Length: 263
Ligand code: HEM
Image 1 (cartoon, rainbow, N blue to C red):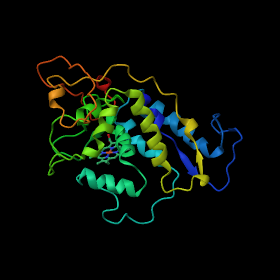
Image 2 (cartoon, rainbow, N blue to C red; image 1 turned 120 degrees about the vertical axis):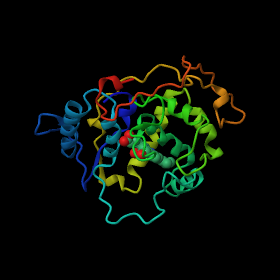
Image 3 (cartoon, rainbow, N blue to C red; image 1 turned 90 degrees about the horizontal axis):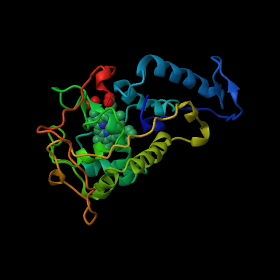
Image 4 (cartoon, rainbow, N blue to C red; image 1 turned 60 degrees about the vertical axis):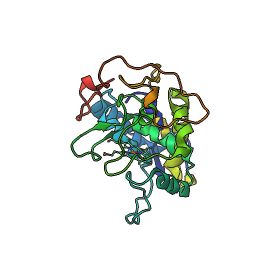
């Protein structure tokens, strides 16, 4: 697994009594709690046999492991409880607010899409990325979403001006994006859970590789003129444009493990 995205992953498991002594796991790993041993073994297995050093499709999917250990849902969520991607941005923000997430926290969470790709939005495209650098946890996502584009199929452009300054604040500010994402993820990971019944197994996370130092750039042919919504009263970051007469070609590798896919 690579890039600072790794910092978001934390496994926890529900228990009734915490035990903070270091223990030896059956596979030789050491853990602060025996409950974390299976996750250390899982991490070793994933790193060696699935991720193979690439921030590819399999790494994107592993975000879900953050929630491992929570009691399973006993019934499907009622319609409307979990917002749909085609809902208006405003109504999605309202639903998140119900769960205690301010709009700025929601936007911080969306940094996950920096390395995400969509399989179900446009049926004619598989692994359609959200930005031009789908294998790098960088701020391109926040820049490129601001560019004039088309909405989710069947919807108009879906924007809520209340988030404009938060979006813009993440553009070309890797540290701010990473820190905000980590804080929002930490909140999301335990939302609705009694934290005293959870053991923090974040120690299983391998050290993140340093973030990219490359400044954000407009994709080839795009510039400040193409930004649909900016933060009123705050100058937009001054960014250069990638060279090229055609729009930036986005790396594509549905299988996720092709070495040519790493950016
Ligand atoms: C405003 C709320 C959100 C909306 C509207 C949204 C929308 C979407 C959509 C449409 C996709 C593509 C799904 C597909 O076609 O396969 C997607 C993928 C993804 N989302 Fe979100 N999402 C939201 C919140 C989040 C949050 C809070 C996280 C995690 C913190 C997240 C993480 C991801 C990841 C990692 C993927 C890519 C999965 C992959 O590459 O296989 N999303 N999201």
